[in-house]
Amino acid sequence: MRIGNIELPPQPLFLAPMEDVTDIGFRLLCKRFGASVVYTEFVSAEALVRSIKSTLSKLEISREERPVGIQIYGRDVHSMVEAARIVETAQPDIIDLNFGCPVKKVASKGAGAGMLQNIPLMLEITREVVKAVHTPVTVKTRLGWDAQHLIITDLAEQLQDCGIKALTIHGRTRAQMYTGEADWSLIGAVKANPRINIPIIGNGDITCAKDAQEAFARYGVDAIMIGRATFGRPWIFKEIRDVLDGNDAAPLSIDDKIDLLEEQLQINVNRIDEKRGILHTRRHLAASPIFKNIPNFRQTRIAMLRAETVAELTKILEDCRNLLKALNDDALRTQDKAL
Image 1 (cartoon, rainbow, N blue to C red):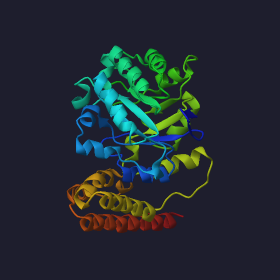
Image 2: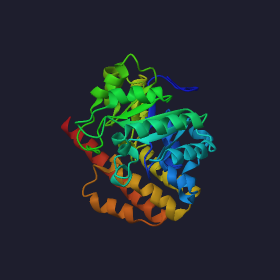
Image 3: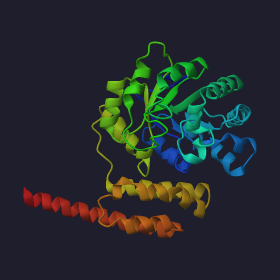
């Protein structure tokens, strides 16, 4: 699979761009565990044009995470073009246009998935951005605004004609937000369209290797993008990659996973500072599925989200480590007795 001049391995796995989630520390861990392409948090075109410091900081990328994409969103042709030019100075491998974010503060203003209600403007923005930069331009969008407007099959051709190098499709409408199940049948229909010659990347509800196998086999997509299932779980890429590649690799232990979460915390603290590094990390910790077997975990999750120092957060993680290992030992003893 190729995106412009970027050559990717068979059945590549992408880390989705997510606000307050895909910071550089998390991206580096996902890359280590098998993500073929990672994306920064999405950035506002208007904020880039106005040189907002916090937005400009999101353009920071590192050599170790390449290939890496930077995603922008907006509703104005001029600001999107200017933002793309600013982004290009950061030298990403891909510039992605967000026409899929469903959250109210974005879509209600006509940006993100709001563009699905103004296709002529979406196409104009896409054409002008493609002309303005040398970096490969891609698009991420949804099936349509709602169930009565499932336009993705025609829209995919129109976006391809604008010159994009790949298209990511989230298998939901804007009206669905993140509810219900992603509909991959329409993603498959786009991929099966003989007039489509750019890579099609499927997105939505990929939570394990079985999901990924089905998406590739049943719908024929060129790549898969994983979003919410990565929260506190950068090793999901290894779990999926091992199965796709036929590797009989041992799963990571509880110790391995806790060590990784602590490493993520330390990366962010070292990169920014203690306060903001913790803010970047604790959402991942509270959402990590490795803690789901801890009884009455709610209070511990609240403590994670309130922690203000590395020492405090590390102690919570170490307490969880010890508890999980004790629970695992109890389960093994119970299993031995049953045998």
